[in-house]
Image (cartoon, rainbow, N blue to C red):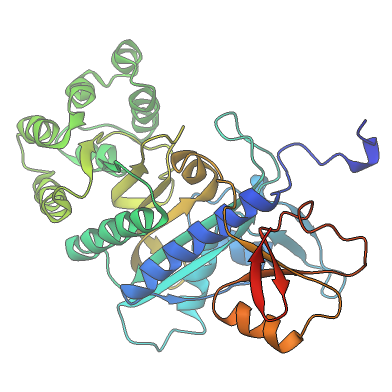
Length: 370
């Protein structure tokens, strides 16, 4: 029976050895992939002043942050809920004089005050990369490519990428399909829910064709181009075609130009990553502006829980383990570890090699199968 004192808060859980090993292996593989593309790792602190975290990027909801008072400064602190914001701060301060474009990557836990219905976890491991100083088509193409490479390095199969245009309504509402500020918000809301009837009621009947510019990329982008009679989306459509062309057969590409969930601070381009076996999105990315420094950037974030779903969950550890009896030669143990053995040393005469999961026992200077 579980002691009530040992229960964890809702949305938090322990990662036991098999899961922790799978997380560590996948994280290392993704970071290595980013490093191979020239991305340097940074490690921002878990806690910052709330004002700093909230002030660097639009769309960061302070109400979702775990906040408390700093006993030293008496100012409000917060646990980070998105590491992208911290990377923006690093680029604008400690690395302000570094040559651009600046390539940075990161991995670390984030915390949320409360869970949402789609994802109940309140602590998540976020892994990602940011290309700071540009939000060009070339930068967007590189970010999508690096994200795909990171997922493939972790072992994810059959990756698909869904493109979106986060500023689509604002762009069209200026001249092509005019809307005042109040109706823009209503039209965005109905497009988010894909509700044709609600879109008409909100005064957005002219936006109905956008609901059908979705699906496999080649077909959907042609539909979007047909809708864009005034050419307001010309540069965006051209950019999307160029980004898709760089992906080739490494991933399936789709388009949902009105999708805004998870793109609160992206500008002209956004993308969502999916993989076979994952229950939800593996990550999201796109172009944005770092508040304060007003520097353009392009990046992505990947999340570990759905990634492990795509990998089929943690696998059993099938490595051979060598049991080292009491009084063994420590130099021999060190030599065997150096050539790849995993060892478990006895700490008492009652230690049972088999019960401890060992496959071999040290016999003099050499391993002997049990």
